[in-house]
Amino acid sequence: MRHHIGKILPIDGYAVICHYELSSVYFQSLTHLYQPLIGAKALALYQTLHSESLLSGDTSFPQTHHTLMNYISLPLDEIYQERLKLEAIGLLKTFKRDTEENTIYTYQLLEPFTPMEFLQDGMLSQLLYHHLGDKQYRLLRSCFEQTHLKQVAEGTDVTKNFNDVFDMTSTLTTINLGQEINSEQEPQATNGPPTSDIDFDWLEQMLKQRMLPTASILTEQNKKLMNQMIHLYNLANHEIEKALLWAINDENSLNQEEFKSACLDLFQTKQTKSSTKVINTKDKLKTNESDQAQPVGKEEQFIQLLEQISPRQLLEDLSGGNQASTQDLKVISDVMSKQGLTPGVMNVLVHYVLLKTDMKLTKSYMEKIASHWARKNVKTVRQAMTMAKAEHKKYQQWGNNKQNYNYYKKPTKKEVIPDWFHDRNNQKAEQQHVNQQDSNQQQETNGESENAADLLKNYLKDKKSNQG
Image 1 (tube, rainbow, N blue to C red):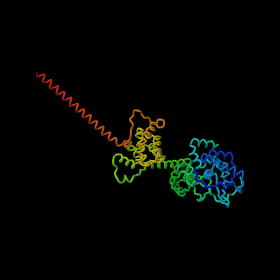
Image 2: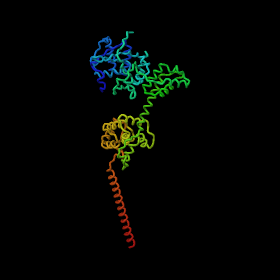
Image 3: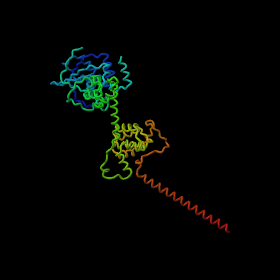
Image 4: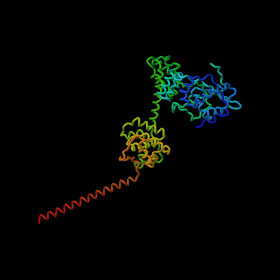
């Protein structure tokens, strides 16, 4: 996506300021700790700018961004995106000043954390833990548990902060490059991820009420960690209070690892509740036609039912009133959110799949049908039923593919079809079946009458012969 074309022009100049040299310790930190979070392109831009600072050394004669494009073989919009990552992670500050000829950017490189400083930073270490996983993170941690004249940058500080670049609501390390960043907002000078405000006065009063020592708990280091966690997990002040009380140990000090774990648990609990809320939401889709007239026929009544109940209620109804399992609800939630299905359409899918797979919710089978409906823009219960009828043979082939789905069907087993799937021709078939039964019964009655007549005839004949 090229949302940032025009933010920087190739003719715009740039100069680089750097007050340190990259030692082997910094290279280890950049490669193993920073790179998983910002990516290889951002790291290449950082190293290129650092080399530029050693070569030029004079900000009076800036180069153009066209030169930078040739150095790292990236288009200018990508260079801009990678620059934002460096700013957000605390490796770069950007200053902008306009001249009569063009715009000049001054890039001031910031000294990266050493490995131990990085791992001791609450927010950065937690981000790395989520990205690498527990095993790799512990391996890195165990491995690492082994002055120049400063120039003053001219111009207005236009460095973007962590909030502007990273979107923490959708995923912990997703770059929020899908939205335009407002360059007119107030710049904030940052060195690393920014912090959010916490009402520490309230926390202090809360601790005093519980007779806990505020000085040993609300230290500057702990305050910094709290600010980082409230932003990282998008927590409220009362949730930080709950995590704080949980993590205070017997010595009345804050266990930082337990505090971070408590914040993660609170975040995951909120995510689970939001997923369950989606499942329990009832579909409100009703056409003007259905509002004006009562449904006629069983199929119309069934359509109206599926439009009004939630997928959870449907599961429980099909289970004889038993409570729906957490695993089944999670499967439905994942399919609904990924494919964007309405609850009514999801009800049709659940009903169809349960009857096709011997009352089992096969996730891969559901996802394949759901993605097909999403591409076909199926939005209503009636559309979903029509699609199921039209594509029945195709869905049957998908269901019989044993390599893709975790269930088996015996060839001799009778196929189960939802009642709403059958068309009105079944009524004729049922009538023919009734007529055939009546005909068979009539034949049996006639046969019984003929047998009775023969018996009577033989009886009279024998009786006459005996009299003679």
